[in-house]
Image 1 (cartoon, rainbow, N blue to C red):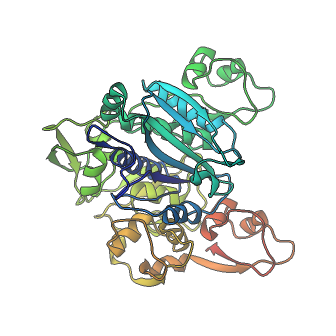
Image 2 (image 1 turned 180 degrees about the vertical axis):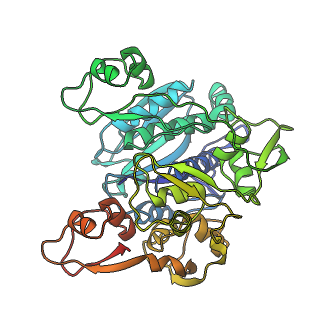
Length: 460
């Protein structure tokens, strides 16, 4: 998967954003961004966030995260969360002059499907130089797909009521639209992945419906289509997500208090929003004061199994279950990182025969310009969650020169290779029985172009 996401919580700290009736934009945007960030992580999409608490960010600090987390190219999608003001009503999206309207249109349609009125998606030009974007997050993030999402108006009573009750439903709609756009299987909270199909030359809605045993009307409903016209390369949902039963793990109970959100509770108890929703059979993220929730305990001694799906990688599965790639390799006696669709993997628990990562030896790494927890985790074949745990981190923001603990055992699963004349990623991947995607991931590559003499990390 080549797409990467940067989530932005607009304003923050000394900058409250739009204010009305005691409500502050920065509070809505922080809740939205934290939920969005957590959901993309659960779905295995590489993601960074500009702020995860109520802190003041300078313009340059915000831009540094946007531009340095994954580089600047069209497959870096920046989602800047905002609440509007000025007396209007409904959601709208602004997109860059360099980008197409496809993704903003799909996002706005999904937000509308959750019951929020929608206005429009549009581009805005700088008055003194109409060749440039009005907003700096578009103007100063070259080549990225940077979107400014306005969920509603803070000074409109109808919008305020909907935002207070349904904001995270609208954020989930954004996640849903983006995952479908980038071709990642969408998994609803408490659900299983949708099956998708990429439209080929000669396809029609009728032929696709026949192929997948459904109807044209159902395809149009699942994909919010208003006509039968298709585009080659368009990603269609061809089966609907269904709920999965709650897990049978041990749990404790927790009573919801004023100010609680699922994201906040998940963070407090070192679990995920998705796990809480599954365990409590929740169909919405809205909580009620006094509501009793089941919280999964961390002392389970069982192991789980997982069936490999199309698009999976060891790194993606490790992130999904909060373990390391080494844990998966050891638990399943794997000699390669290549997976087969339908393959059954053991997911080690803390009480399994696989030693927990907390017992592994560590070494240190000094943060350099452009580093992120995601890129460092990739480099050392571990997870962002494990780096946070090893270093007692409460934020993903790093400082140049900061010294981090990293698992030393992770480096033993790779070797290095020097690029020669005539080499390509495909050729090297075949030579070492791995995949081009795995080479890109291990080496933080944003392009398949290689230089003679370039050093590549290769999985053993």
